[in-house]
Image 1 (cartoon, rainbow, N blue to C red):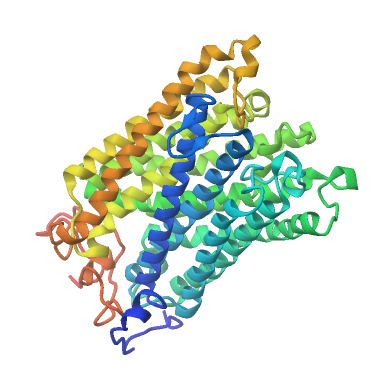
Image 2: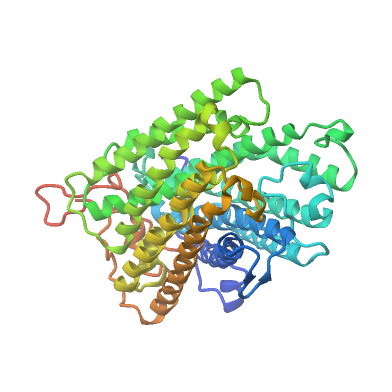
Length: 563
Protein backbone atom coordinates (compact mmCIF):
# COMPACT_ATOMS: atom_id res chain seq x y z
CA UNK A 1 0.00 0.00 0.00
CA UNK A 2 1.27 3.43 -0.93
CA UNK A 3 0.79 4.90 2.54
CA UNK A 4 2.85 2.21 4.24
CA UNK A 5 5.88 3.46 6.15
CA UNK A 6 8.93 1.48 5.15
CA UNK A 7 12.13 1.24 7.18
CA UNK A 8 14.47 -0.11 4.53
CA UNK A 9 17.93 1.31 4.60
CA UNK A 10 17.93 2.24 8.28
CA UNK A 11 21.26 1.65 9.96
CA UNK A 12 21.02 -0.60 13.01
CA UNK A 13 24.41 -0.73 14.76
CA UNK A 14 24.61 -3.14 17.68
CA UNK A 15 23.98 -1.14 20.88
CA UNK A 16 26.17 -1.29 23.97
CA UNK A 17 25.29 -3.25 27.11
CA UNK A 18 23.43 -0.42 28.90
CA UNK A 19 21.48 0.65 25.83
CA UNK A 20 20.68 -2.96 24.94
CA UNK A 21 19.46 -4.24 28.29
CA UNK A 22 18.41 -1.17 30.31
CA UNK A 23 17.48 1.60 27.90
CA UNK A 24 16.60 -0.28 24.76
CA UNK A 25 14.19 0.83 22.07
CA UNK A 26 14.43 -2.55 20.31
CA UNK A 27 10.98 -4.13 20.32
CA UNK A 28 12.43 -7.59 21.05
CA UNK A 29 14.27 -6.46 24.17
CA UNK A 30 11.22 -4.59 25.42
CA UNK A 31 9.20 -7.76 24.82
CA UNK A 32 11.69 -9.71 26.94
CA UNK A 33 11.42 -7.11 29.69
CA UNK A 34 7.63 -7.46 29.69
CA UNK A 35 7.89 -11.26 29.59
CA UNK A 36 10.31 -11.59 32.50
CA UNK A 37 8.46 -9.00 34.58
CA UNK A 38 5.20 -10.85 33.93
CA UNK A 39 6.81 -14.16 34.89
CA UNK A 40 8.11 -12.65 38.14
CA UNK A 41 4.66 -11.26 38.95
CA UNK A 42 3.12 -14.67 38.13
CA UNK A 43 5.34 -16.28 40.75
CA UNK A 44 4.19 -13.70 43.31
CA UNK A 45 0.56 -14.23 42.32
CA UNK A 46 1.01 -18.00 42.57
CA UNK A 47 2.50 -17.66 46.04
CA UNK A 48 -0.48 -15.59 47.16
CA UNK A 49 -2.83 -18.28 45.83
CA UNK A 50 -0.87 -20.84 47.89
CA UNK A 51 -1.37 -18.71 51.01
CA UNK A 52 -5.14 -18.31 50.84
CA UNK A 53 -5.78 -21.84 49.56
CA UNK A 54 -3.83 -23.20 52.53
CA UNK A 55 -6.17 -21.22 54.77
CA UNK A 56 -9.17 -22.77 52.99
CA UNK A 57 -7.76 -26.29 52.90
CA UNK A 58 -6.34 -26.29 56.43
CA UNK A 59 -8.20 -23.50 58.28
CA UNK A 60 -6.40 -21.41 60.90
CA UNK A 61 -3.19 -23.43 60.66
CA UNK A 62 0.33 -22.10 60.26
CA UNK A 63 1.11 -21.62 56.57
CA UNK A 64 4.73 -22.68 55.84
CA UNK A 65 6.75 -19.73 54.67
CA UNK A 66 4.12 -17.18 55.66
CA UNK A 67 2.77 -17.67 59.15
CA UNK A 68 -0.74 -17.65 60.52
CA UNK A 69 -3.12 -15.97 58.09
CA UNK A 70 -5.30 -13.42 59.83
CA UNK A 71 -8.67 -12.34 58.35
CA UNK A 72 -7.23 -8.99 57.29
CA UNK A 73 -4.20 -10.58 55.65
CA UNK A 74 -6.46 -13.12 53.97
CA UNK A 75 -8.39 -10.30 52.30
CA UNK A 76 -5.14 -8.72 51.17
CA UNK A 77 -3.69 -11.83 49.53
CA UNK A 78 -6.99 -12.67 47.80
CA UNK A 79 -7.25 -9.13 46.44
CA UNK A 80 -3.66 -8.88 45.33
CA UNK A 81 -3.70 -12.34 43.73
CA UNK A 82 -6.59 -11.35 41.49
CA UNK A 83 -5.14 -7.94 40.73
CA UNK A 84 -1.69 -9.29 39.84
CA UNK A 85 -2.85 -12.18 37.69
CA UNK A 86 -5.26 -10.04 35.65
CA UNK A 87 -3.40 -6.76 35.27
CA UNK A 88 0.26 -7.67 35.83
CA UNK A 89 0.46 -11.15 34.28
CA UNK A 90 -2.18 -11.66 31.58
CA UNK A 91 -2.00 -8.20 30.03
CA UNK A 92 1.78 -7.68 29.96
CA UNK A 93 2.59 -11.18 28.72
CA UNK A 94 -0.22 -11.80 26.23
CA UNK A 95 -0.41 -8.31 24.78
CA UNK A 96 2.82 -6.47 25.54
CA UNK A 97 5.35 -9.32 25.43
CA UNK A 98 4.00 -11.31 22.49
CA UNK A 99 2.76 -8.17 20.74
CA UNK A 100 6.07 -6.38 21.02
CA UNK A 101 8.07 -9.38 19.95
CA UNK A 102 5.93 -10.63 17.09
CA UNK A 103 4.22 -7.66 15.46
CA UNK A 104 7.27 -6.26 13.62
CA UNK A 105 8.55 -9.75 12.77
CA UNK A 106 5.21 -11.06 11.49
CA UNK A 107 4.35 -7.98 9.40
CA UNK A 108 7.88 -7.57 8.04
CA UNK A 109 9.27 -4.32 9.51
CA UNK A 110 12.30 -3.49 11.61
CA UNK A 111 10.69 -2.06 14.76
CA UNK A 112 7.63 -0.41 16.20
CA UNK A 113 6.44 2.86 14.71
CA UNK A 114 7.35 4.75 17.89
CA UNK A 115 10.32 3.00 19.56
CA UNK A 116 10.82 5.59 22.32
CA UNK A 117 7.16 5.53 23.28
CA UNK A 118 7.49 1.75 23.37
CA UNK A 119 10.35 2.01 25.83
CA UNK A 120 8.42 4.53 27.92
CA UNK A 121 5.42 2.21 28.11
CA UNK A 122 7.52 -0.52 29.73
CA UNK A 123 9.16 1.91 32.15
CA UNK A 124 5.74 3.13 33.31
CA UNK A 125 4.54 -0.47 33.59
CA UNK A 126 7.57 -1.39 35.73
CA UNK A 127 6.87 1.60 37.97
CA UNK A 128 3.27 0.45 38.36
CA UNK A 129 4.45 -3.01 39.47
CA UNK A 130 6.81 -1.44 42.03
CA UNK A 131 4.00 0.75 43.40
CA UNK A 132 1.65 -2.24 43.66
CA UNK A 133 4.15 -4.44 45.48
CA UNK A 134 5.22 -1.50 47.65
CA UNK A 135 1.67 -1.31 49.00
CA UNK A 136 2.43 -4.46 51.03
CA UNK A 137 4.94 -2.41 53.04
CA UNK A 138 2.80 0.55 54.05
CA UNK A 139 1.15 0.91 57.42
CA UNK A 140 -1.92 -1.30 57.59
CA UNK A 141 -0.87 -3.48 54.66
CA UNK A 142 -1.99 -3.78 51.07
CA UNK A 143 -5.47 -3.14 49.71
CA UNK A 144 -7.94 -5.84 50.75
CA UNK A 145 -11.21 -4.85 49.12
CA UNK A 146 -11.14 -7.31 46.18
CA UNK A 147 -9.71 -6.67 42.71
CA UNK A 148 -13.02 -5.03 41.70
CA UNK A 149 -12.43 -2.32 44.36
CA UNK A 150 -16.10 -1.82 45.16
CA UNK A 151 -16.87 1.25 47.30
CA UNK A 152 -17.38 2.01 50.09
CA UNK A 153 -14.70 -0.54 51.11
CA UNK A 154 -12.20 0.98 48.68
CA UNK A 155 -12.90 4.52 49.85
CA UNK A 156 -12.82 4.16 53.63
CA UNK A 157 -10.63 2.87 56.43
CA UNK A 158 -13.14 0.21 57.44
CA UNK A 159 -12.35 -3.50 57.61
CA UNK A 160 -8.59 -2.90 57.86
CA UNK A 161 -8.55 -1.18 54.45
CA UNK A 162 -6.22 1.75 54.92
CA UNK A 163 -6.48 4.76 52.63
CA UNK A 164 -2.77 4.39 51.86
CA UNK A 165 -3.04 0.80 50.63
CA UNK A 166 -6.18 1.51 48.61
CA UNK A 167 -4.68 4.65 47.08
CA UNK A 168 -1.46 2.89 46.10
CA UNK A 169 -3.52 0.13 44.48
CA UNK A 170 -5.46 2.72 42.52
CA UNK A 171 -2.27 4.56 41.51
CA UNK A 172 -0.64 1.33 40.33
CA UNK A 173 -3.64 0.45 38.14
CA UNK A 174 -3.71 3.97 36.71
CA UNK A 175 -0.01 3.81 35.80
CA UNK A 176 -0.49 0.45 34.15
CA UNK A 177 -3.37 1.82 32.10
CA UNK A 178 -1.16 4.66 30.88
CA UNK A 179 1.49 2.14 29.84
CA UNK A 180 -0.98 0.04 27.85
CA UNK A 181 -2.64 3.04 26.24
CA UNK A 182 0.79 4.04 24.92
CA UNK A 183 1.45 0.48 23.80
CA UNK A 184 -1.95 0.19 22.13
CA UNK A 185 -1.36 3.30 20.04
CA UNK A 186 2.03 1.93 19.01
CA UNK A 187 0.69 -1.49 18.04
CA UNK A 188 -2.18 -0.11 15.99
CA UNK A 189 -0.12 2.44 14.08
CA UNK A 190 2.63 -0.09 13.37
CA UNK A 191 0.29 -2.70 11.91
CA UNK A 192 -1.66 -0.19 9.85
CA UNK A 193 1.36 1.67 8.44
CA UNK A 194 4.49 -0.50 8.53
CA UNK A 195 3.57 -3.74 6.80
CA UNK A 196 5.95 -5.34 4.33
CA UNK A 197 5.42 -4.63 0.61
CA UNK A 198 2.59 -6.76 -0.73
CA UNK A 199 1.03 -7.55 2.66
CA UNK A 200 -2.65 -6.71 2.29
CA UNK A 201 -5.09 -6.55 5.17
CA UNK A 202 -6.19 -10.17 4.75
CA UNK A 203 -2.56 -11.31 4.59
CA UNK A 204 -1.97 -10.28 8.21
CA UNK A 205 -1.63 -13.30 10.56
CA UNK A 206 -4.70 -13.78 12.74
CA UNK A 207 -2.65 -13.33 15.94
CA UNK A 208 -1.66 -9.82 14.89
CA UNK A 209 -5.28 -8.98 14.05
CA UNK A 210 -6.39 -10.20 17.47
CA UNK A 211 -3.70 -8.24 19.33
CA UNK A 212 -4.64 -5.05 17.48
CA UNK A 213 -8.36 -5.55 18.08
CA UNK A 214 -7.66 -6.26 21.76
CA UNK A 215 -5.76 -2.98 22.10
CA UNK A 216 -8.57 -1.11 20.34
CA UNK A 217 -11.09 -2.62 22.78
CA UNK A 218 -8.86 -1.63 25.69
CA UNK A 219 -8.45 1.95 24.47
CA UNK A 220 -12.20 2.31 23.88
CA UNK A 221 -13.23 0.90 27.28
CA UNK A 222 -10.61 2.39 29.60
CA UNK A 223 -11.89 5.98 29.49
CA UNK A 224 -14.96 5.58 31.75
CA UNK A 225 -12.96 3.63 34.32
CA UNK A 226 -10.23 6.27 34.36
CA UNK A 227 -12.87 8.90 35.07
CA UNK A 228 -14.35 6.66 37.76
CA UNK A 229 -10.91 6.07 39.27
CA UNK A 230 -10.34 9.82 39.56
CA UNK A 231 -13.62 10.13 41.46
CA UNK A 232 -12.61 7.21 43.68
CA UNK A 233 -9.27 8.87 44.35
CA UNK A 234 -11.12 12.05 45.37
CA UNK A 235 -13.33 9.98 47.70
CA UNK A 236 -10.21 8.49 49.28
CA UNK A 237 -8.15 11.64 49.67
CA UNK A 238 -10.49 14.66 49.54
CA UNK A 239 -13.58 13.40 51.39
CA UNK A 240 -15.84 13.75 48.37
CA UNK A 241 -18.90 11.50 48.15
CA UNK A 242 -19.21 10.18 44.62
CA UNK A 243 -19.66 6.59 45.81
CA UNK A 244 -20.36 6.79 49.56
CA UNK A 245 -24.13 6.64 50.23
CA UNK A 246 -23.60 8.29 53.62
CA UNK A 247 -22.40 11.37 51.74
CA UNK A 248 -25.02 11.21 49.03
CA UNK A 249 -23.07 9.05 46.59
CA UNK A 250 -23.98 5.86 44.76
CA UNK A 251 -21.72 2.77 44.98
CA UNK A 252 -23.51 1.27 41.96
CA UNK A 253 -22.01 4.05 39.83
CA UNK A 254 -18.57 2.52 40.36
CA UNK A 255 -19.88 -0.92 39.42
CA UNK A 256 -21.17 0.40 36.10
CA UNK A 257 -17.96 2.27 35.32
CA UNK A 258 -15.77 -0.64 36.42
CA UNK A 259 -17.60 -3.37 34.52
CA UNK A 260 -18.02 -1.27 31.39
CA UNK A 261 -14.25 -1.68 31.26
CA UNK A 262 -14.00 -4.96 33.16
CA UNK A 263 -15.96 -7.17 30.81
CA UNK A 264 -14.31 -5.94 27.60
CA UNK A 265 -11.08 -6.56 29.53
CA UNK A 266 -11.90 -10.28 29.48
CA UNK A 267 -11.78 -10.16 25.70
CA UNK A 268 -8.71 -7.91 25.71
CA UNK A 269 -6.77 -10.89 27.06
CA UNK A 270 -8.89 -13.60 25.41
CA UNK A 271 -8.28 -12.48 21.81
CA UNK A 272 -4.44 -12.64 21.90
CA UNK A 273 -4.71 -16.03 23.60
CA UNK A 274 -6.98 -17.33 20.85
CA UNK A 275 -4.63 -15.84 18.26
CA UNK A 276 -1.70 -17.77 19.72
CA UNK A 277 -3.74 -20.98 19.65
CA UNK A 278 -4.81 -20.35 16.05
CA UNK A 279 -1.20 -19.94 14.87
CA UNK A 280 -0.14 -23.15 16.61
CA UNK A 281 -3.10 -25.21 15.39
CA UNK A 282 -2.46 -24.25 11.76
CA UNK A 283 1.22 -25.24 12.01
CA UNK A 284 0.75 -28.55 13.83
CA UNK A 285 -2.34 -29.63 11.88
CA UNK A 286 -0.51 -28.74 8.63
CA UNK A 287 -3.70 -27.11 7.37
CA UNK A 288 -4.83 -23.69 6.32
CA UNK A 289 -6.90 -21.99 9.01
CA UNK A 290 -10.50 -22.89 8.29
CA UNK A 291 -12.50 -19.73 7.54
CA UNK A 292 -9.81 -17.06 8.02
CA UNK A 293 -12.23 -14.24 7.12
CA UNK A 294 -15.03 -15.74 9.19
CA UNK A 295 -12.59 -15.94 12.09
CA UNK A 296 -11.75 -12.28 11.62
CA UNK A 297 -15.40 -11.19 11.39
CA UNK A 298 -16.20 -13.21 14.52
CA UNK A 299 -13.38 -11.43 16.31
CA UNK A 300 -14.84 -8.07 15.36
CA UNK A 301 -18.23 -9.28 16.57
CA UNK A 302 -16.75 -10.23 19.93
CA UNK A 303 -15.19 -6.78 20.22
CA UNK A 304 -18.45 -4.97 19.48
CA UNK A 305 -20.65 -7.13 21.71
CA UNK A 306 -18.17 -6.93 24.61
CA UNK A 307 -19.42 -3.37 25.27
CA UNK A 308 -23.05 -4.37 25.87
CA UNK A 309 -22.79 -7.17 28.43
CA UNK A 310 -21.31 -5.49 31.50
CA UNK A 311 -24.41 -5.42 33.72
CA UNK A 312 -24.64 -9.22 33.96
CA UNK A 313 -22.20 -8.68 36.84
CA UNK A 314 -24.95 -6.70 38.59
CA UNK A 315 -27.96 -9.02 38.47
CA UNK A 316 -27.95 -9.08 42.30
CA UNK A 317 -27.12 -5.38 42.68
CA UNK A 318 -30.67 -4.13 42.38
CA UNK A 319 -30.82 -3.17 38.70
CA UNK A 320 -34.20 -3.00 36.95
CA UNK A 321 -35.31 -6.58 36.12
CA UNK A 322 -36.23 -5.43 32.62
CA UNK A 323 -32.62 -4.38 32.05
CA UNK A 324 -31.49 -7.71 33.53
CA UNK A 325 -33.40 -9.43 30.73
CA UNK A 326 -31.64 -7.26 28.13
CA UNK A 327 -28.20 -8.12 29.49
CA UNK A 328 -29.10 -11.80 29.70
CA UNK A 329 -29.77 -11.72 25.95
CA UNK A 330 -26.58 -9.81 25.10
CA UNK A 331 -24.53 -12.18 27.27
CA UNK A 332 -25.91 -15.17 25.38
CA UNK A 333 -25.35 -13.38 22.06
CA UNK A 334 -21.64 -12.84 22.68
CA UNK A 335 -21.30 -16.59 23.13
CA UNK A 336 -22.10 -17.04 19.44
CA UNK A 337 -18.96 -15.47 17.87
CA UNK A 338 -16.75 -16.97 20.60
CA UNK A 339 -18.24 -20.41 19.93
CA UNK A 340 -17.77 -19.87 16.20
CA UNK A 341 -14.06 -19.25 16.75
CA UNK A 342 -13.78 -22.52 18.67
CA UNK A 343 -15.67 -24.43 15.96
CA UNK A 344 -13.40 -22.93 13.28
CA UNK A 345 -10.39 -24.20 15.24
CA UNK A 346 -11.96 -27.66 15.46
CA UNK A 347 -12.67 -27.55 11.71
CA UNK A 348 -9.00 -26.71 11.12
CA UNK A 349 -8.00 -29.76 13.14
CA UNK A 350 -10.40 -32.04 11.26
CA UNK A 351 -8.49 -34.12 8.72
CA UNK A 352 -5.15 -32.55 9.55
CA UNK A 353 -1.78 -34.28 9.92
CA UNK A 354 -1.64 -33.48 13.61
CA UNK A 355 1.67 -33.56 15.51
CA UNK A 356 1.38 -33.57 19.29
CA UNK A 357 4.49 -31.58 20.12
CA UNK A 358 4.39 -29.57 23.35
CA UNK A 359 3.00 -26.34 21.83
CA UNK A 360 0.14 -28.30 20.25
CA UNK A 361 -0.65 -30.02 23.55
CA UNK A 362 -1.00 -26.61 25.18
CA UNK A 363 -3.19 -25.37 22.31
CA UNK A 364 -5.51 -28.37 22.58
CA UNK A 365 -5.52 -28.03 26.36
CA UNK A 366 -6.62 -24.42 25.94
CA UNK A 367 -9.61 -25.44 23.82
CA UNK A 368 -10.70 -28.21 26.21
CA UNK A 369 -10.46 -26.14 29.39
CA UNK A 370 -11.88 -22.96 27.86
CA UNK A 371 -14.94 -24.88 26.65
CA UNK A 372 -15.71 -25.82 30.26
CA UNK A 373 -15.48 -22.16 31.20
CA UNK A 374 -17.77 -21.17 28.36
CA UNK A 375 -20.44 -23.76 29.15
CA UNK A 376 -20.53 -22.94 32.86
CA UNK A 377 -20.76 -19.24 32.00
CA UNK A 378 -24.19 -19.80 30.48
CA UNK A 379 -25.61 -20.41 33.97
CA UNK A 380 -24.15 -17.15 35.26
CA UNK A 381 -25.33 -15.22 32.22
CA UNK A 382 -28.94 -16.03 33.08
CA UNK A 383 -30.29 -13.62 35.68
CA UNK A 384 -32.41 -16.33 37.33
CA UNK A 385 -29.62 -18.78 38.10
CA UNK A 386 -27.07 -16.02 38.74
CA UNK A 387 -29.09 -14.83 41.73
CA UNK A 388 -28.23 -18.11 43.45
CA UNK A 389 -24.73 -18.70 42.06
CA UNK A 390 -23.40 -15.13 42.19
CA UNK A 391 -20.44 -14.65 44.53
CA UNK A 392 -20.19 -18.37 45.25
CA UNK A 393 -17.27 -20.64 44.47
CA UNK A 394 -19.17 -21.75 41.35
CA UNK A 395 -18.36 -18.31 39.97
CA UNK A 396 -14.74 -18.67 41.07
CA UNK A 397 -14.43 -22.02 39.30
CA UNK A 398 -16.09 -20.70 36.13
CA UNK A 399 -13.85 -17.64 36.05
CA UNK A 400 -10.72 -19.75 36.41
CA UNK A 401 -11.84 -22.13 33.68
CA UNK A 402 -11.90 -19.12 31.38
CA UNK A 403 -8.98 -17.16 32.76
CA UNK A 404 -6.39 -19.87 33.43
CA UNK A 405 -6.56 -21.10 29.80
CA UNK A 406 -6.18 -17.47 28.72
CA UNK A 407 -3.45 -16.27 31.08
CA UNK A 408 -1.54 -19.49 31.76
CA UNK A 409 -2.18 -22.25 29.21
CA UNK A 410 -2.03 -20.04 26.11
CA UNK A 411 1.10 -18.34 27.45
CA UNK A 412 2.84 -21.70 27.83
CA UNK A 413 1.70 -22.54 24.29
CA UNK A 414 3.17 -19.33 22.94
CA UNK A 415 6.44 -19.57 24.87
CA UNK A 416 7.11 -23.16 23.81
CA UNK A 417 6.23 -22.35 20.19
CA UNK A 418 8.29 -19.15 19.78
CA UNK A 419 11.08 -20.09 22.19
CA UNK A 420 13.33 -21.24 19.30
CA UNK A 421 12.84 -17.84 17.67
CA UNK A 422 13.46 -15.92 20.88
CA UNK A 423 16.56 -17.77 22.05
CA UNK A 424 17.79 -19.87 19.12
CA UNK A 425 17.40 -23.09 21.15
CA UNK A 426 14.73 -25.75 21.54
CA UNK A 427 13.13 -26.40 24.90
CA UNK A 428 13.36 -29.97 26.16
CA UNK A 429 10.36 -31.83 24.76
CA UNK A 430 10.16 -34.47 27.51
CA UNK A 431 10.22 -31.87 30.28
CA UNK A 432 7.68 -29.84 28.34
CA UNK A 433 5.21 -32.72 28.21
CA UNK A 434 5.72 -33.56 31.89
CA UNK A 435 5.03 -29.91 32.70
CA UNK A 436 1.90 -29.95 30.53
CA UNK A 437 0.30 -32.95 32.24
CA UNK A 438 1.50 -31.77 35.66
CA UNK A 439 -0.33 -28.49 35.09
CA UNK A 440 -3.57 -29.49 33.34
CA UNK A 441 -4.52 -32.47 35.56
CA UNK A 442 -4.04 -30.66 38.92
CA UNK A 443 -5.81 -27.61 37.48
CA UNK A 444 -8.98 -29.67 37.15
CA UNK A 445 -8.44 -31.12 40.62
CA UNK A 446 -8.41 -27.56 41.98
CA UNK A 447 -11.58 -26.24 40.42
CA UNK A 448 -13.98 -29.13 39.85
CA UNK A 449 -14.48 -29.43 43.64
CA UNK A 450 -15.14 -25.69 43.79
CA UNK A 451 -18.08 -26.06 41.41
CA UNK A 452 -19.52 -28.44 43.99
CA UNK A 453 -18.88 -26.24 47.02
CA UNK A 454 -20.30 -23.26 45.15
CA UNK A 455 -23.52 -25.09 44.27
CA UNK A 456 -23.73 -26.14 47.92
CA UNK A 457 -23.65 -22.48 48.93
CA UNK A 458 -20.02 -21.64 49.75
CA UNK A 459 -19.68 -17.88 49.35
CA UNK A 460 -16.30 -16.54 48.20
CA UNK A 461 -14.06 -14.26 50.28
CA UNK A 462 -14.94 -16.13 53.47
CA UNK A 463 -11.95 -16.44 55.76
CA UNK A 464 -13.23 -19.46 57.68
CA UNK A 465 -16.34 -21.62 57.24
CA UNK A 466 -16.30 -22.83 60.84
CA UNK A 467 -19.03 -20.30 61.67
CA UNK A 468 -21.41 -22.14 59.34
CA UNK A 469 -21.43 -25.40 61.33
CA UNK A 470 -25.20 -25.26 61.69
CA UNK A 471 -25.51 -25.35 57.89
CA UNK A 472 -23.29 -28.45 57.51
CA UNK A 473 -20.48 -26.49 55.87
CA UNK A 474 -17.85 -28.76 57.52
CA UNK A 475 -19.15 -31.58 55.31
CA UNK A 476 -17.61 -29.71 52.37
CA UNK A 477 -14.17 -29.41 53.97
CA UNK A 478 -12.77 -32.46 52.17
CA UNK A 479 -13.51 -30.73 48.85
CA UNK A 480 -11.72 -27.56 49.97
CA UNK A 481 -8.74 -29.65 51.09
CA UNK A 482 -8.70 -31.56 47.79
CA UNK A 483 -8.68 -28.27 45.89
CA UNK A 484 -5.75 -27.02 47.98
CA UNK A 485 -3.74 -30.20 47.40
CA UNK A 486 -4.37 -29.80 43.66
CA UNK A 487 -2.94 -26.29 43.80
CA UNK A 488 0.18 -27.47 45.66
CA UNK A 489 0.80 -30.13 42.98
CA UNK A 490 0.21 -27.68 40.14
CA UNK A 491 2.56 -25.09 41.64
CA UNK A 492 5.28 -27.69 42.17
CA UNK A 493 5.22 -28.64 38.49
CA UNK A 494 5.91 -25.03 37.52
CA UNK A 495 9.43 -25.57 38.82
CA UNK A 496 9.95 -27.94 35.87
CA UNK A 497 8.98 -25.18 33.45
CA UNK A 498 11.29 -22.65 35.12
CA UNK A 499 14.19 -25.12 34.96
CA UNK A 500 13.43 -26.04 31.34
CA UNK A 501 13.11 -22.38 30.34
CA UNK A 502 16.46 -21.24 31.73
CA UNK A 503 18.40 -24.48 31.21
CA UNK A 504 17.44 -24.58 27.52
CA UNK A 505 18.82 -21.09 26.94
CA UNK A 506 22.35 -22.48 27.19
CA UNK A 507 21.99 -26.23 26.83
CA UNK A 508 18.98 -26.75 24.59
CA UNK A 509 19.37 -28.18 21.11
CA UNK A 510 20.19 -25.45 18.59
CA UNK A 511 17.08 -24.56 16.66
CA UNK A 512 16.87 -24.84 12.92
CA UNK A 513 16.00 -21.72 10.96
CA UNK A 514 12.35 -22.81 10.76
CA UNK A 515 11.95 -25.76 13.15
CA UNK A 516 8.14 -25.94 12.89
CA UNK A 517 8.09 -25.41 9.08
CA UNK A 518 5.86 -22.38 9.45
CA UNK A 519 4.80 -19.95 6.72
CA UNK A 520 4.83 -16.62 8.57
CA UNK A 521 7.58 -14.02 8.25
CA UNK A 522 9.15 -14.29 11.71
CA UNK A 523 10.71 -17.62 10.69
CA UNK A 524 12.59 -16.04 7.77
CA UNK A 525 15.06 -14.17 10.01
CA UNK A 526 17.89 -15.65 12.14
CA UNK A 527 17.08 -17.01 15.59
CA UNK A 528 17.30 -14.94 17.71
CA UNK A 529 16.68 -12.05 15.31
CA UNK A 530 19.36 -9.36 15.03
CA UNK A 531 18.81 -5.71 15.84
CA UNK A 532 16.77 -4.42 12.92
CA UNK A 533 15.27 -7.86 12.18
CA UNK A 534 15.52 -8.12 8.38
CA UNK A 535 18.69 -7.65 6.34
CA UNK A 536 16.31 -6.74 3.52
CA UNK A 537 12.60 -6.14 3.90
CA UNK A 538 10.58 -9.12 2.63
CA UNK A 539 7.93 -8.98 -0.05
CA UNK A 540 4.69 -10.79 0.69
CA UNK A 541 2.99 -12.79 -2.05
CA UNK A 542 0.18 -14.63 -0.24
CA UNK A 543 -1.69 -15.23 2.98
CA UNK A 544 -0.14 -16.64 6.14
CA UNK A 545 -1.51 -20.20 6.20
CA UNK A 546 -0.63 -22.02 3.00
CA UNK A 547 -0.15 -25.61 4.21
CA UNK A 548 -0.67 -28.98 2.55
CA UNK A 549 -0.86 -27.65 -1.00
CA UNK A 550 -0.93 -30.39 -3.65
CA UNK A 551 1.83 -30.42 -6.24
CA UNK A 552 4.49 -28.81 -4.01
CA UNK A 553 7.56 -30.61 -2.70
CA UNK A 554 7.13 -28.99 0.72
CA UNK A 555 3.84 -29.00 2.60
CA UNK A 556 4.11 -25.29 3.40
CA UNK A 557 4.49 -22.16 1.28
CA UNK A 558 6.09 -19.19 3.11
CA UNK A 559 4.54 -15.79 2.66
CA UNK A 560 7.70 -14.34 1.14
CA UNK A 561 8.46 -17.20 -1.28
CA UNK A 562 7.72 -15.98 -4.83
CA UNK A 563 6.91 -19.47 -6.15
